[in-house]
Length: 429
Image 1 (cartoon, helix red, strand yellow):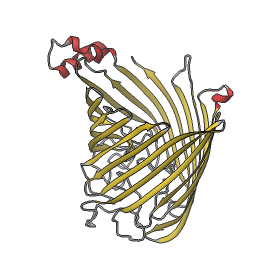
Image 2: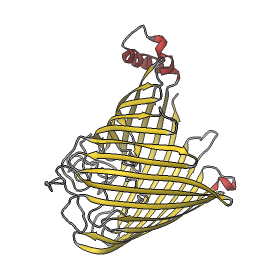
Image 3: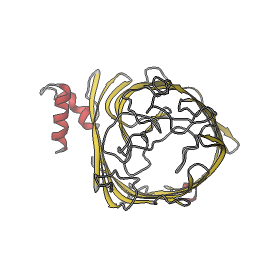
Image 4: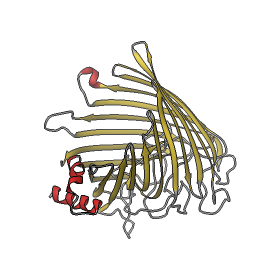
């Protein structure tokens, strides 16, 4: 069955039933895997009447990747399909979309195809994407991942330089089946153009320099500068991570048009985006130990923002990842004016002869928060992560992870948060 399906795909890609010679790389380099993800989620609002979110589901994530046809121009097709099945989801929803009665649906699914073309050291893709870029980071922190639809080109024609550019047109949220346009937190109007470009330069030993630009039409322009450096220091290694974002309004957000404004803003308090955010994080790794210290500062005029579907009504598309050092289990510490100090400790038990076992604890403290209803507010969060992945033998591919977060915030309130994931990745071929 695998061979028949792949042969049909390559025949469609080459446009000729005589192109079997071209199909060799397409088939031989293909892979397929199915991830089974059992996911429990608990979000407990400690000091309000808001109902605790308590849900349990089973996810199936199928990922099929072809190789490329042989020749100067290689062609391929990838396929993604995800399915979430409700096991128990009373009350409020956090990982399942709602049916017509407002209850969590029994199951939901989404997916699609990605066509790809490779020429020399440049690759173009169009279809389902899961980008991991400073200006656009696909979230996979719930039962089903966030998926994007659009086109992307990645080029490595110049040694030590990776250039990336593209346009995103639609996105499907973590608890939705529907592809929608894009917005920001608080924005209720959809944009269908997120254009981006940038690159990573690694021509200097142990140093990576980054620049990216993104425009979400009618919402914002965003510039990013980054630097990553590793320095041998004594018996260990000191890793430095520097990031700077400059975000300004675009189109209808600049015009203060209804439906295009940020939900929470700073001293301006009019919903227009005008933000600078910088951060520095230092990690010293020695053996299995890693000690981290960091600081982040958000300017006063508006919140830091990246794409977020939270304002789109009844789409279940809210929630995303932001490429800031403070993006945590419960909060991301990006209110206007917020200054955040973070510290963390992680241990890799490989050093004690238990490969695959990892533990970490992170603490964040933010203050000087400015919102529409007050200034100089504070919040703190403590996160614990414990995970184990079987490295070999019969149960290779089995993983277990527990994530616990405690947030105490003058803005969001007091929240206790837990996620338990049991996953198994099954190679199909």
